[in-house]
Every structure is written in structure tokens, then in C-alpha cells.
Length: 183
Image (cartoon, rainbow, N blue to C red; front, side):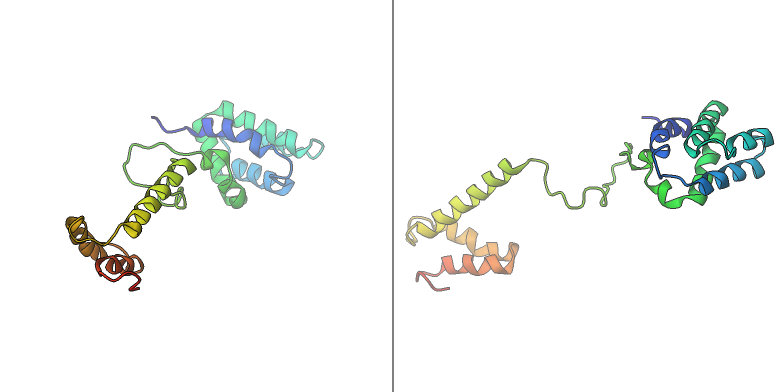
């Protein structure tokens, strides 16, 4: 999948940027001034005066600016994002195009995005596994401790404490003893 261009990102971010209270009048003016002073080929003096018109609302001026940049090309949109980062860094981090999941071909795991989600199988799978574990625990607890019946199971459970946590291992070791209730 190809990477999203700056013009595509600007189209996606325009409704977010035009939302009430997103960018202040000072931030919009600073962005316009930076695009005009450092990159006069992006915004001429005439365009900058039009976009800085104090008679028009900030939303209208910003809408006109974003439309002008989208028609101008990729480099102009990229410079807008650079100016937005400089003058409104917290807002730049909240842009929908930056928060959208990025699909990549790499096989690295993204540890930050889904760090707290254990499984996507849902509560039914959890309850099934819990029921299975509880059933096995009851089976082991309720079965008589007859060495003739389950000699192989005792050998397997004897090596299990090496693998499992120490809190579980004392219950498994108690199963190996012949006396019930030797915990």
C-alpha cells in the first residue's frame, strides 16, 4: 500500500482543523506569515493579505487557505504541516491523519498501540478456558489419590512446578503427597 501524500492528509484533516476552537486567530496568522515570509512561492503577498483579512472569520480564512494549498500541490501542503507543527504542536499531534492506523509491510509488533489488549477472542473464549481450567482442577482435586490409576499423571505434575509459577507449584506438589490436606 502506498503512503498517504500530504495533499491527501490535508483533505482528511481539513474538517478537524476547521472545528471550533482548534486554531486561534494568532496561530492562523503565524502560519500564514511563515508560509509568506519563508516560502513566498507558496503564498504571495497578495494571497497572504487575503488570508489575513481581519474582516473575515478565522474559519473562513483557514478554509480558503487550505483550499488554496490543496490546489497548489504536494510541497505546499508539506510546508503547511511543517508550519502547523511549529506553531500548534499539540494540535498537530491530534490530527486524524496522524492517528489513523498506518498499514505497513514490516513485521515488527507495535507495542504501544495494543499493549493492554490480551486477546481479541472475546469473553466467551475466556469463560471457556476458565471453565476448562476449573474442571481440570476439580477433577484433580476430587479424584482419589490411587497410585495405580494415574501413575503417569503424577510424574508429569511432578515436573510442572519447574515450568509454572511458585504460587501454583505448591498446589501441584501437594497433589503428589499421599496425605490429603497437606498444604
